[in-house]
Image (cartoon, rainbow, N blue to C red):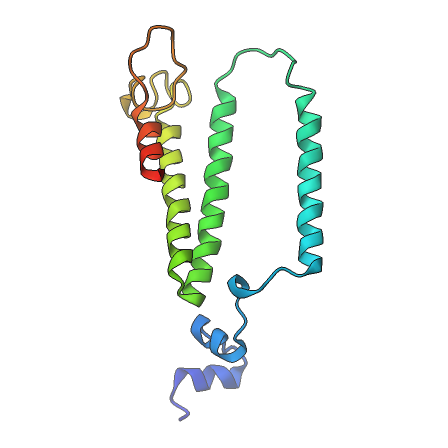
Length: 163
């Protein structure tokens, strides 16, 4: 028995249980736990702080600034980051629970982040005057000009897949 790598690591104090063994030992998984009063208070506190930030930001909505293409790029970058973090957390839970709804939800977040990456790199004026990959106005998000007959196909494809 001494030649097994787990036995050697247990003796050294470095042994860690795999994800499936952790479920077998405790039976407690985050995805199956109901929210208690403390978690509800924390969620309410975070919601109220975000609401206060939103209300404070509304006062700046009437201020006029120079035209810039930066806000959409920052918005897409933050959305990509948030979607990838959510995907990672859901996939981690799926590896423990093996629940198909978690896998479907995680796949949706991954799809959205990949579509946002495609929109970001084809956005006009962000990385080059015509967007990366020589994207035209019909590819990524672009401000529509009066009389434009084309609509961007990446956001339209994303909308169709999600419906």
